Image 1: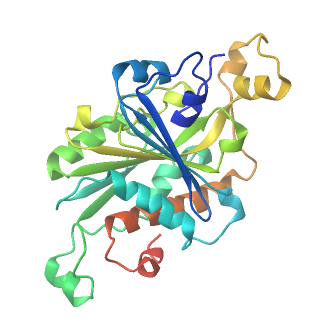
Image 2 (image 1 turned 90 degrees about the vertical axis):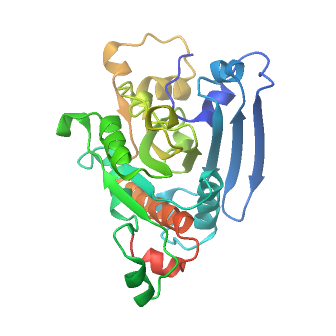
Length: 288
């Protein structure tokens, strides 16, 4: 079965035959989350799972549209996993929200960018005056999409990265999943970067350490599922004829507006907490 998904945890489950030794999986639970860490260690493993060599962290939680609380175990769990992939040492971190703000299922990245606590412009003297003398330099942008800007998202991010020379880049984007149970209930964090639009058949230029020259952490939440995959999954008919129209269709939940609003606030808060560990989360909550 040909399945379109951005999630390593789903691709891992679709591997037929013996799983390569180069794929390692570790699972643990917190109060409100289930965390699965998949390590893809070599080329053979990467070919089997269809993902580059690297670390893939999946945080499963209650659906975003059901819970309005932000300062809870979900925030701690996600921010801890983001922190685990950040390079050590001083330096600016660039956060880029990818996607189209005018299309709700694709608006996660831009909405998150609005909630990032950007501090690169704050001088140390001003930070000390306002009681935030331990701020780390962070800057953010929402890239838009090629159809709006005429510029590849990867080109925009590389241009900014070349100018400010960050120690790392965090990219946030909406993802595609194979299963309905993943929509609005899953956060994927990886150190392999991202290829925007790959899960919905609109593959753009890769954004990774290979293209930017610095570590790239990609964070995403699945907001759509492939219609053909969904139909086959619900009917059990794995051999149904796939029309061209069906192959181009993606399905999103009815409550997608609420899901994007709450998911973007939680992800932005988690990124802020990971980048500013010395700052009170209550204060960071006021930013998102």
